[in-house]
Length: 158
Length: 252
Image (tube, rainbow over all chains, first blue to last red; front, side, top):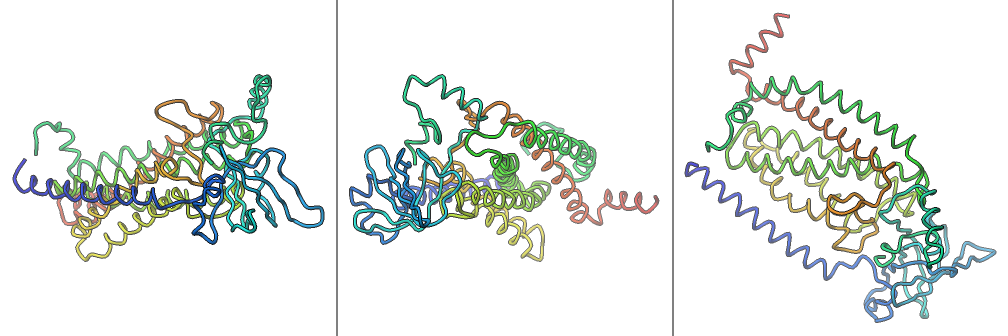
């Protein structure tokens, strides 16, 4: 390789390394500061105290959905591995909203419960035909299994 | 240049040889892209069963995911060509890098639009500033930046060199887009198709997706060949081989 090309190669590689380090540090810094959401247990630990509005993410507790008969108001409980948070919401829910579904809600705390202004449903990365899901649910009937909604793998990661 | 690069690759790097090679490759790639694309669409929209959770709405995946893969893949090709262009000043590498950018930008835009349409149906929102969506938007801006910088210079080769630097530095965003769903809590779900380990998708749904992936790759090669050919003619105008082609065209 002639000297000019060698020099260019060194410069370009140096720039690339510098950019990679800068990018790596940025990602590392964001990992500590960038919280897209808080889980119920994090909220209970008081980690969300500094925020007026924040996102709460977790799974809808089975059987906790209660709809008001005369308005669009709905209450449900969002849970994670070791925390639970009652949520109140008035509005239209996404199609995927159901028991055991991962949801992400935006809102604020009010007298110990979370008042949401937006409820988003999260779906997992599993795709399969309905018949297969039913067959799997039948095969697992002895054990406690998630009948509708998420796979257990996605449940731990709201 | 170094002796370990085979002779045919050296030859392919010369504009007239590549011009002829790309001209021969082009129609085959277009035909493959159309045939495989139609097969994949039929498989995805008609043959594949509805999803257990999302019903028929998940079918947008057959456009969304191959486009997203192409957005990242083309960026990789662009960055490698940019690297070669910066170090060895090979004209063809500059042209490949610069002509890849608009195609990659188009695929990224398709990804964002189809993702938005999917999001409003499944998540309940068109847009959210989570790590995956934001880094994908940054990817689009990087493409647009490369295109803009390239055209901001009077001298095209100078513009290509400046834009190649931007393209090269922007490569750090590619792993960020890919791993964003693992590194941060995102609304976007994790990866379904894994190179290592089992994929979480049924076979009846996966084959149209992979077929579409090959179809989009073929389309990219076709589109790149066409764009590079046109660019080479413009860059090399006045050279003997271009004159011969021009003379041949006018004689017809």
